[in-house]
Length: 460
Image (cartoon, rainbow, N blue to C red; front, side):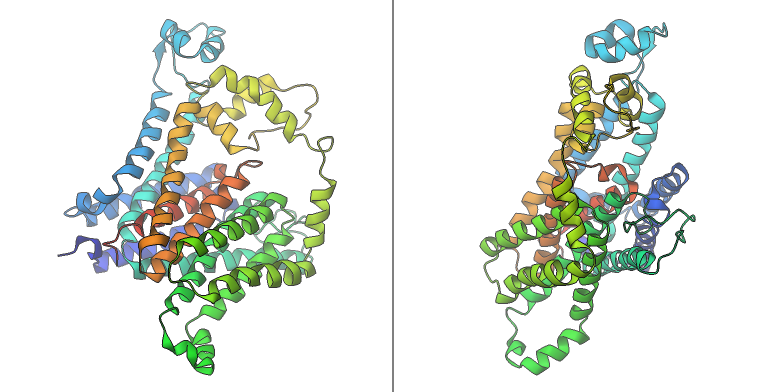
């Protein structure tokens, strides 16, 4: 019996619960509020426990292929928990002088590596929820038909967000339907921060492009393409055209967000991965190149031009170091990194530590570093951060192997979307903090899980 296709009615129900959770996550302001991420944590823990119980006789065999990513994830969680362990002050001083200096001021005998144990506890609970979501996805999406359903569902969620965000601006509404927040000049969907909205759309677009790539690859061996009328009609019947329209709408909303790096991350990742795939995929079609070209010509130069691409361009042109304070924030964060480079200040503590390092030239309030690489390095320490970033790097490598070696068109399409997501996220987090938004981080974790699943040749 092939344990990887062990599907029961109970697992079908749990799979739909997973989809329902993914549908909910972006709605309450990207789940970036304490009550919202608490609901996410409860849902993620509960769904994993139910899934683990459902697969209790096959749990180890189902997860055995994914030892490396699971160990990486667990190692990061374990170190975050270590940051909360109270240590004698002399030992703490040896490990982290920065943390010891903070606790010496309050005259305690024992203190943890984290300078704010409360914030680190909150971050640890969220991280465990992401891990549970990762394992749940590995267990429940362990077949190509379910991966296809998941990809189409993510496209649908992205389409909803795009239409909601764009219509708010086009209809000129003053307050959003979600919590009656003021509607600004940028599309934000159900998110508060435009860059989180743009990053979310980038992830959904990447999955959608991956799905279209899978349909193009599946047609490479199809003789039906010689019958152009039949192929044209089947394109509409199998939903490919609907997905393409959905992607166009998402691109419009992405441009309307006026997010400079959000737009750059999507178009750059699509270009780079599109060109890379031409070298990796052996049985490629002209349609693959046409898809990449059409995304530029139709989306960037025609559709997006009507909805504000010129405004994004002008924002980029007007950007200068004298206008932006993010460079000052990064400059002020360097001493912070030097003080906590090895053991970290505690996951989630940038909010606590940065105000003590702020220079006179920074007047705004920054609870994030606007650079996730830097923030993780400060909070978790450089060694633990390197361990964590091994996870997407390993997923990217696995996706390359899928594009080169797997025959399944859907597996290769999912790998294409995974590579786009990873590269797009890698670009975007250089100037922003999308991984600090629970909805974005959760979707990225799910995409990473899918990237590992399709690298498993027994998944069919």
